[in-house]
Image (cartoon, rainbow, N blue to C red; front, side):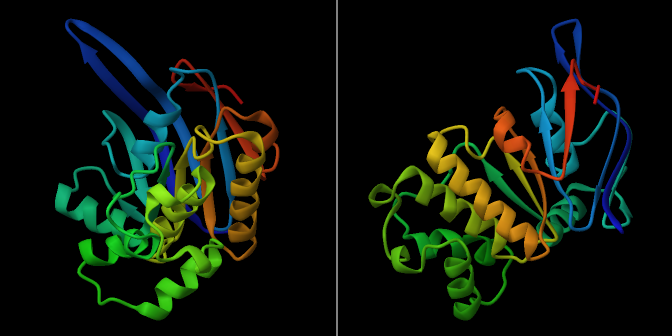
Length: 221
């Protein structure tokens, strides 16, 4: 199995005045093609920091990261943006939908930012994939929380990424809706998509093929 992401000795330091806070401390982490991984740990353990580094949203202060075989250390921001856009889709706890755009238009947004031609067939396919074909013309305010998160997942999928990174994607949802979102992730994984999910929900984490535990910025299991 080919590794899509390989991080070695990843360290991330945040500075607060004269104090140095290690969000990550010498973390090794790899993601293989077709994996469905979860990252768990208490608040402040470094889960989001790790996800941001893996997704090239943030640069590590130490260690190295290879994304799709490309070493990211020393890469300019423009190169990181291109690499990120071509390989990774992101899903967050907050849906970050544009309230004046329909579900279809929100899903289409990354195509506009990446200057790709609008592909109505692709948008239709993604809407069906996330179970929103009949809600395509609804605004976010007309959708339930689970439906809004499905729009956000569709937006992450529209550029056909190799991997989706999700940070507490069910954190704002009730248990039944959370299960529906994870069922969607499981179906996407069965179709070949690689996923890494940060979650506090142990029942959902058990559904993934492997679970990693962070504590105080270090991998402990």
